[in-house]
Image: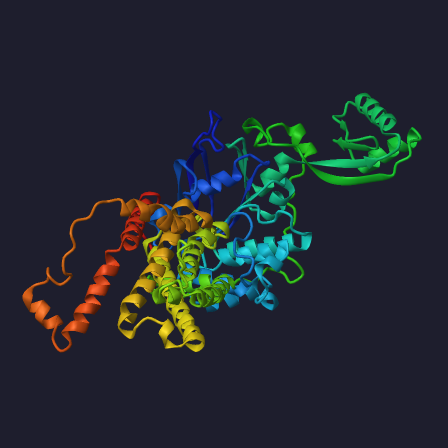
Amino acid sequence: MLQAIGLTSAPRRDQPPAVDDLTFEARPGSVTALLGAQGAGKTTALRLMLGLEQGRGVAYFRGRPLHRIAHPAREVGVLLGDMPGHPGRTAKGQLRMLCDAAGVPASRADELLDVVGLGPLRDERLGNLSLGMDRRLGIAAALLGDPHTLLLDAPSADLSPRETSWLHGLLRAHAAQGGTVLYTTADPKEAARAADHVVTIDAGRLVADQDAASFSGTRLRPRVAIRTPHAARLADALSKEARAGRRSVEVVADGGTRLTVYGSSCPEIGETAFRHGVLVHQLADEIGDSGPVPAARQGGDDPRDDEQRTTARLPVQTGAGGAAPLPPVLDARPTRGPLRPFRYELRRMFGVRTSPLIAAAVLLVSLAVALPLAHAGTTPPAGLLAAWPALLPLPPAAMGAGLIGALAYGDEYRHPALAGARGTVPRRLGLLLAKLAVTGAVAVLLALVAAALDGAALRLLYGADALPGPGSWPALGAGWAGLALGCAWAGLLGAGVFRVTAAGVTSVIAVPVLVVPLVKKVPTGPSAHPLAGLPEPVRQLVRLGRPHETDSWLIGMLRLVTRPEATALGLSLTVLFCAFVFTGLRRRARW
């Protein structure tokens, strides 16, 4: 059972709260519709239940608040708005990535695609899906963890009648298996047709809490729609005959040629039009919405109202195939092992072409810069391998690594893959570590491949003299790898703090442009031999065999670490990590 108790959103700019002291229940085994006009507070109510909106109140999912549930995806399936995701990702790739986030087997994605009718389109990219297909994919994402409760925000908006019928059948099939379904809608007729229970809200407050039969009897009124070129004459005739017969008939003019009549029937109106010689183009029975019913009228206390309102529940449509199928039940509980977030991040990074294209562009630009530099002969060999002229703040490999790192969180906010469950990118410790590890490994590999490619091209065109000596390769390799690693992490943390890719790229560029000049202005003391501070046994062990080469290698490494660029990069990473922790890293990390 889903219980919402005292939900109240935080007021903004001296305006009343969008949701004010809202309390209701959604029972298992039934479909509950949260009904309200646009702006009534339906979406805000769902976000309050999920803890995505600031406010008061609590929502219990089978007796537990969401933050106390170990595996939220196994308890609550959520669809807020359209299906999020990178338009270049395939439907299968999107669901498999979310399977890793939910801790369920990847095979679950193929099962859900078949259930929602997207099996033939599993390799179609999200940017090519229609609105109906996109909504089906969103339903599949909500069902990935085999949840007990479904929270869906306007799932049938802008869908065709056939797709709406399929959706209602799927929701009813989930409820028939003992699940709880709560979805929002602005259409009273849809609520009466598809739901077992209807909760009506207006201006954020509870208006009515009824079963579907009571809702139909108190909210929906039968009416007759008329089209005639003599609407005024017919309206006058209907009103006069109603007064003469002491009948309660309401005639509403909906336009120049349209009338809507409450409290009468097609035969009565047709006879009146015939007696007065009025030409009628259309005469049809309809079900109309009488608007939110005040609390005093919820039960239909006035018998005259009961005569004018229908109490029959509209039939549920499940499509030509009957009840919609559901995926098989998950037997194994999701694991909390360390590979889940790593697999998620690998699928996120390599599920689209962005990162491979960035890597290819970096290698081409690095070659295009290194070869002219070697021909000019003004750049030292170490700068040639990194393709780093003095006029550039960073070499191409470091800039590419920073961009890949910035996209690690930037794409999450632009195309939020995890928004289906949390509404925003979760600041989980396991997810952060996975992103740091994956982007760091890609950055180091990119830097080393770029240096190796540049070195091979330089050796082929200009000979071995254009390259640095073999003894300096370990220190140079460590320097390039460290620079690329630091840039990748700076971009990642910058995008995570400010929630946009551009902020991550700015954080990368700010290190050589702003932080390094500041570090160089800090006075430093006299330098000493790098090995002088080590204990004598350690120094003797280090110098065994080849003392001069070992000492030279360590001296090079220590000089590299103590350079202003390394100090500035380390300082920037420390500040960005502290800012990331301060702005949202949750104390209770789930993975």
